[in-house]
Length: 428
Length: 94
Image (cartoon, rainbow over the protein chains, first blue to last red):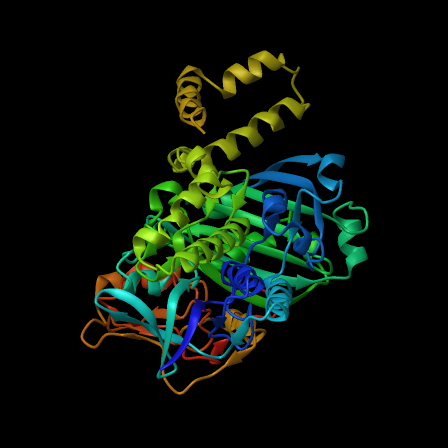
């Protein structure tokens, strides 16, 4: 049996970051990827927040092929016949290194793989890992493409489903309550058209989130990210809600209807749809975390449940990078002790706890309870639009005072309900 | 009838390498299991549909390998794995 020091499963951001650091330290590391090339099975909304990475290979990310620096944060509330948009443009977000960048994984993952290979990582693509090899309950390697490959440590970076964490006994199959599916189209447009349509300076970008009628009360929302010369337009909807919420409607229809909205269609006009992709995402946050280590085994990135939806921000990629790097550092320590047992690898857990990964997940552990409220996805967006419309409207009859209009639109029962929802929101 | 012509066009934009084996299949005897209905609504590629006899069928061509059906229906009714290496959808943009 061929043996390596470390086998990383999955050439995504977690796996490649882990491999980069390990190879840099002179550790013999192989990354096994089932796609034709790194990124072939990966997708994001998406956007990567840059600043959490200032302690995680900051020099490397300066060269990364990101799409656009997000300088405009836009939130749009949709009701069936109207929408209300809030747009924040900030110079602070633009100051290099920018606050966050839009990202396409096809470009980013291939670039990072090349960087990891330059450090000495061995990359094996077009190869699926089928199982873990275990001896006396310890992980001692993987079975890939019918071949047994040994390793001191296997790092599972195999994405949100993580069949390997299941096989290691650390994870049970996800439930439709805890997972959402994100699906998006990439639509090509000339960069100048994008900058004109979104009122952006060259190289700068916008990130737009949509809440309301587009999911018909289902937990989820829409997103629109400006890339260099394409737009990423998509939806994220909780799987349970897609499967059960009445009236039932097939997932693709939500995106088709979203695209036809007057807020969206003109932005896409003349663009060419070049790819349609989808992936599941853990929405459980802190409550959905697993023990990310076992004998001879570590789990990083989405595979470990490191994703966080805090409403205004949706994060995963910087958690993947940081956890991959921490997993590599944990392996390095274990290697010095020549002890790859769970007890020795448990240092990974403490490293995660000391980093923004588990700190942020913990801080926002109540976000899910607040967001899990149908009123947020239908009632509030509708109410906000209606109220604003009434205040703006000059009709045939003499206009009432603003305060009267507000009192009419938001009665006592409504005020009480808002206060109750706000109380939950204050825990975030 | 799945997927719709519109969806077929959409999926046709993806780079897709067909394989010999189906990586996801409905377990024999479970075709009418109510748990499969979830996939009809949740699959973002619209690959699941219900036949007139109440059986759910899966047209695996174009599968995005997103994992939604595994979570929505469970592995008691679906025999679920990823395609073997170098097969299936190959995202260029992601």
